[in-house]
Length: 259
Image 1: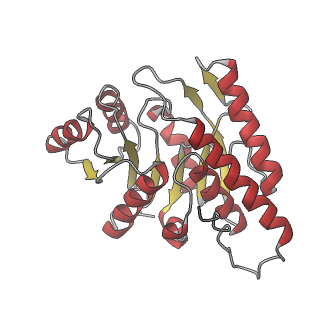
Image 2: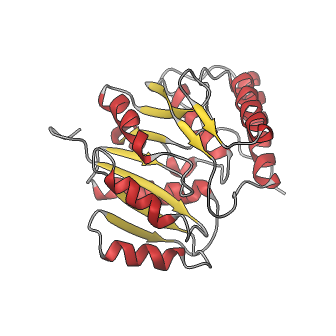
């Protein structure tokens, strides 16, 4: 950690977020502790990537990483993490959705947890002080049910293991086998948090306000949800049948069966 304010990078994966990108980035750049932004665009056909380039040309704290196509949330974050880690320019790396559901004004809560010693800080909806705004009842039910199922199957102590608003201490993130992560969609957040728990990381959940997106459409699909359920089930069953790992070792979750 730098001697003064921590050097923070917010990684924002995008796919068809042309309407929400500019206001979100403006809010992030205005937040404390004055983070930088890395937009990871998966060749959005709506011009999101071009808009990001235009904004970055006028903003020294903004970078853009272009990828060839849509491969999912997990690969986009991993690409962004690699670029950030390779640069050596940051102390803390943050995940944030592009749709405005994560409030940049609450970024300081995550950063405070990291500067206080946490390896991973997770913005949690389902703890005292956390809440959701404009979310229909069935979305809440799905999210809370998914969290409850993952907690049981993975024997996790986290209250919001699916949350995508989180911050990593750079040395801890660098210690993870990023290229060994298997999940492309919704399960990516679960997999990373579960690996961190099994590694004995200092994980802290801080309350956040999650706001339903105003622009665009949700990227959640039935296929993504089924991937998450299948992955969590396989990991949980494997965890129960396998012997305990040696101290300090964090084995990768089992690979999904080949089609």
